[in-house]
Length: 299
Ligand SMILES: [Zn+2]
Image 1 (cartoon, helix red, strand yellow):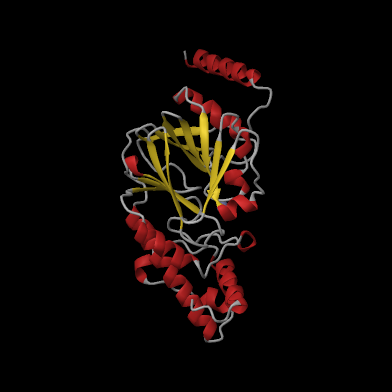
Image 2: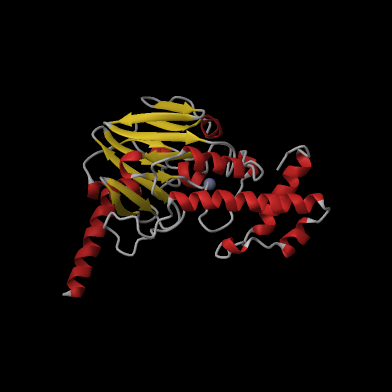
């Protein structure tokens, strides 16, 4: 029985693959969040799909080559096409598949990310950019798209879906670990604490935070509950953690310590004991080089 099921599944898989000349590089999984919104993952990178009366709004497109796999999975869930893409930032692993959604009529990104992606208005597509905040209604479903300042890059958007009290924060928030700051894409470790604090202060009504890379945290996949997800309080604590980290490193730098010494001596307050500090040296070096470039920076 089991063998027959496996054979039938294999046959189905072969049939599906044959139907698409271009084979996707792998499988995308979908998990129900709440109210026709889904968490999508290829095991490394995440996206969110929210179904509206005017099609699916896709928060991040996945890496280049993965659009077909996303569409295959979405076909299991709804007949709706992907009509809108909102990019959290310009990194290839999040925006690489932007062009792989044939029904997408608008692509939304922060103006800096849009510039980094080298966007011009494509045939039949509207490229929508914003500087601080745009509320967007697609098919009667409201989305808030925010930018709070430099951090991971210089164009990180936070997308809030108010009806399910969820925020998709891309790579701005690394849960209980140090963030990656990509200075080549305009990111700033010195600016990050202010950016996170602004977000923590100004975003309200969120009780679930979805990040760009963390796996599905639920033990029971499809209950729609928020168990296991970071809350907005966790985001707020992360903002404080980053502030303390940057302050400690800045103070040590002013005392003449080297980046190596700071990394070796680094000790965060007890309340952050479950935060992972791997990658500290690279982040400390980033802070040192930013301080050197703008010694007047207050942080
Ligand atoms: Zn990124």
